[in-house]
Structures are given as C-alpha cells and as structure tokens.
Image (tube, rainbow, N blue to C red; front, side, top):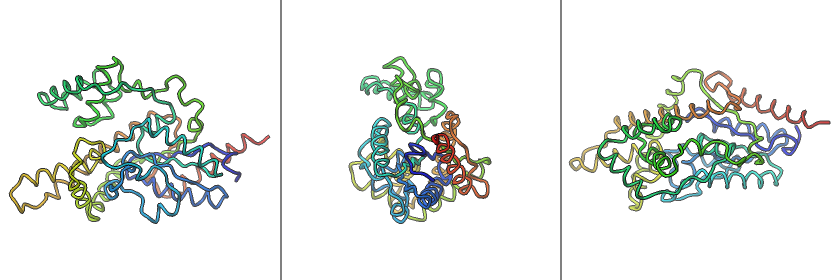
Length: 338
C-alpha cells in the first residue's frame, strides 16, 4: 500500500448510533497502520465535543483514545455551543494538518449534518431573531411543539422528517430560519456557491455501517443504554445539574439520553422527599429517543448516494468494512499509477 498522498484525501465512516463505528474505526486504523499508513481519527459527533459527558455519549475509552490519535473530542464545555460551520472549519484544518504529518484522516461519527456540511458545503444561515423566536415560543406554549412540527412539515418537509415532534430546539430554529429568510432550513444544507468543491473532503470515500434488520439495531441500542445506566449515567447527569449553570435548553443537555435523564430528575425533585428515581421509565424513554435518533440518522444516510454501505448486522461486518476500504484505496492508487 502506498502513502496516503497517493490514495485518498480521507476516509469517512458514518452510521446510526450503536452500529459499531468505534470498533470499525479502530480496526481500520490497526490494519492501515500495518500497511504503512498511519491513521488519525476526526470525530464527527456533536455530543463528543463536550467535556464531562462521557457515559451518555458512549465516548471512546481511555485505552481507545490512546490507541489512535483522536480529534474534536472534549473541546467544549457543556455550556458552550458548537455549530456545523465550526465543525467544517475545524475538520478542514485538521485534515490538512494530519496529511502534512504523513497520516490519513479518518472521519468517524453519526452527526450527519456535519458530514453533509463538510462534503457539500453550507451557506451562512440567518442569525437568531429574538422577536421571531419569542413568537414561536408563545405559539408552542399555546399549541404544543407537535403542532409546530406539523407546520414545519408544510414549509420544510425535508427538515421535518428528520426531527422528532418534540424536538423543540431544532423545530424552533427551522421555523425561525423560514420566517426570517423565506427559505427552508434544508436549502442551506445543500451545495452552495461550490462551497466545498475544492475541499479534500469532497473527494473522500464515505463508508456507512447500516443494519439490514432494524430489530438488530434496536437490541444494540437497548443493551448500550442498559450498560450506560449500570456505569453511572444518572450520576453523571446529576453532577452536570449540580454545576448550577447548565439548563435543559442547552444543545449539550438536549443530547439523547441527557435530556430524558434531566427531565426525570426534575420530576423526582417535585415528588415527596425520598421518592426513588423511576429508572424503568427513564430507561424506556431513553431507548425510544435513541431509536428515533437512529431512524433520523439512517434517513440522512439515504440522502447520500455516494456512500458505500456495509451491513453492520451481518457476520464479519468489521472485516467486510476493512476489506472494502482497502479495495477502495487500491483502486485510487491504480487510478493514479501511470
């Protein structure tokens, strides 16, 4: 195998939550390393950017982080926001730096908006409008967020299908963009002005781990949420609440699992002293929310026809992924050979 400069600008590995992306990425890094191509991983995950949010985000372990150099993990305090535009800027810079070190960037994650923004470019969206936002909040207080989700489906069906009816933050933002600009939010997530046509990411190969049988993924989601609860996820959320400066409307606290745990802890605080946390209810809500996230991720992936799909629920899925990547690298090398 040749050096990364003779192969591809980057390899991207996407997939829904709990599909096995971390294991696949580490296996790829190990095999490519033996082939003489060092790998550095760039996280494409809007939750892994936050510090002190380890259990509920299924953050790679210390051993996994030590095995391969990772980027864009633990770069923000939960009080801070991190946008798709910031991700594109950071990832583009990192890809250049990694290749300058003679290594191959491996983009890994499940935040599909980040992938799409990196591959296709993203226009500058309208700034927040406090007046429009206040009107939407008042409308939601009267009608409920599902009603606003239905309204969004009329003006921006592409975005609406990707959002849960109760996802107030993203529904509000999508409707705000529509009212301010007269354009659907989804129109800003398509190719704009040739934004990234010259970016190394546009020439990268995208591989996607997707299940043939959705029930397999649902079982994996349930198993992982149970493991999180057993590892002290509720204690992690309680520690975040105890800071005193965080609230449930922050992007960090709206991450799947954290939102449900925060709300259940709020319910517990209003109950008589000594009332135990309803763990069964939290588990059910967390699993349902994670399944909904996975469904939205798969919907995003299906809008990316350039992806190479690997059935993650079939025997030997990781081996199949490694083989597919190696073949793609060889093809690229053959194309460049005189």
